[in-house]
Image (cartoon, rainbow, N blue to C red; front, side):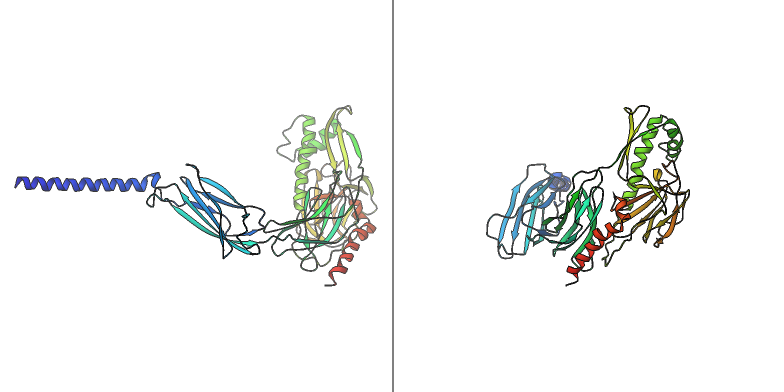
Length: 460
């Protein structure tokens, strides 16, 4: 009987040992990195537009390591392997670049393709086969470039000035449409009928060279770039040398510096001058540029501007585009520089400033060197600003009428005498105010161009 009990006891212990071994082995399988069960990830769009030229991008990732991949492209009848391979141990991320196959097995006229992506990781899970992920992507084939036809444009553009272009653009998968000019992208506005667009463009006054192109890009990456045939007129802008006197720095400059927590602590006179004339100026202009880049997406049926005449019986006291060099003591000691991006007009003290054209007030407040400043959106990307005012007569968000009083001249900001700083901007770029003072220029470069384009559009 003792022997029988001993055998039974030994058998129980054996079973316990086996169970413990299974439990430990199972625990190892579930917790060991070699047997991890997280499937690799495939990151891509669920559907693509493809021009067959630009490679498609597919991102593969895994928490431990990628092992292999396979890419199969199909036109519905025929399938072709367009990518296959294995990864080195430890690779957790890879971006695959998929090119259209050179073989002629796929139907060249196929407008729809499907790509199956299969990826396996380095895990020993799934009986050493690893974790696997698959993804099926729909591809729309589009090899046709967008269409662009320029209907009308201003004959010429002057350095520092503005011009108009009206054109037709079409693509069933159109993604982006804009005019690139003078290093800036100008948003276009739909005009009168679907497929027609218009925009003002600007040539920055401090650039000697200028080109303008209408650029259209579609979802597949096809692009068309059409040059706008402007006749270019260069212009030499004035260069001024201004002595920075202690009275100027200790007075107006110090007063402006006190409005900024950063600048009011500057004690050195010349550093204070640079802080206001350069650093503060750039911040103020950045605000102006940001406000004036907004263009409506709504279809434009008509746009008409009369000439601007903001200050009655005024005289010009400073020009647009003036390059100003400030020196201290001797002219050889240049200490700061800036550009004057508007025109200064002077009349009587606290003279009434009027809006020559209707628009919406997008800003009415203090703006550093520009002082008290209303800014008006006249639509179609054209903005005007009125600096150094003593009093504001409008509020932000208000719609003003033609000839409405909007402010009074003054000496706020960086102004030594009572005057108006008048600026005109096209989508964030300062342009020559004198063009917009001239009814003849507006008729020739704006009104007549719209009329020429309308003859073509209205025939449809």
